[in-house]
Length: 414
Ligand code: NIG
Ligand code: FE
Image 1 (tube, rainbow, N blue to C red):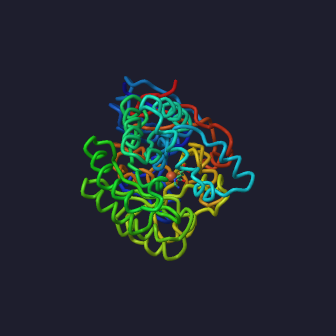
Image 2: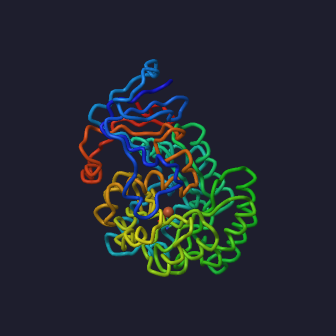
Image 3: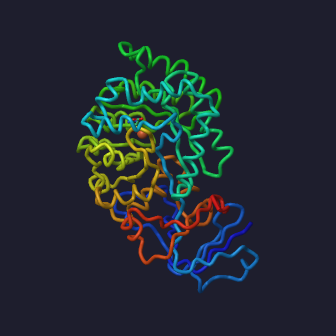
């Protein structure tokens, strides 16, 4: 069905000049049209313009009057662990009582706790929780989501997590990209033999994941107490042999060289960066590796926020994501991420919007057709409640301002 949105108070087109991302100062000036229309056909944006220029050739289309409302590209959540076995609220209470996230992990909790539960679950079991969370995040405006494995840590469980994510891709309207994160933690049995586990990941899991076409990217938790920069470069080189690019976890817990390893391996993005100084920023400068910040992790764990202003000043295309997972960020709200970006990272509302649309799409290398609302882009968009300024989105940090969500020109969750 063809769609015609009319009288849009402000249409955020983001990118009318065909850039692959918005770097540095450009993040503050995503493109927009006031008092606009948008015409979509066959799932794509075909035309945009001012109401005064609306041609009558679109009169056959289903018309939605957006009077007073904003239209934004659907949000792109480029870093989540959306498929997981169960909540870890017991560890949340342990943290309130004084244990740190790292201490819980060292005691066999954390990721290993989740992996124990995954082992007992079928793809169907995993899918049930996953589809509920997918519906939850679509209602909050997410139209594309990246989903990692990493709560299996055995061949069969890692495959099952990715199979559940691929099933979501087939059965739900949300757009899905998948990432193999076998190197998320070192299982108990390999505690004294990290290389042994890395070999299992590289020589058994990776070939099986590739053979079944289960992943679009490969991730490594490169951080203090987890995997080293050498492990990371080794694994990403192996992944490249299967045509799988890297998107890695780096610098959440310490400055152990994760960002530099990601850049050296040509990773599409390095994510977290709560522990990030000048050397890391220098490594990123002038490269296409996207720094992706996850401010809900700092909010939830009480660790430092990433240096968004310094990354923007270095002319980098900063992205933002939720990291939705049961340990460090049990929430998938991009609107809340945008509020934290403004209040804690001191990003402008426009910068936050660029970071969850075009730049997030670039972190997935899908920004030629996702993350903007210019002709040729997917018709993935949100209609907000009536509002006066983009700033009201992050300002009303606990309100729901998303009225309707469309993916490929079709309304979801009606
Ligand atoms: O991105 N840091 C590594 N992985 C996840 C959290 C994993 C967990 O605690 O379950 C993250 O924060
Ligand atoms: Fe993560």
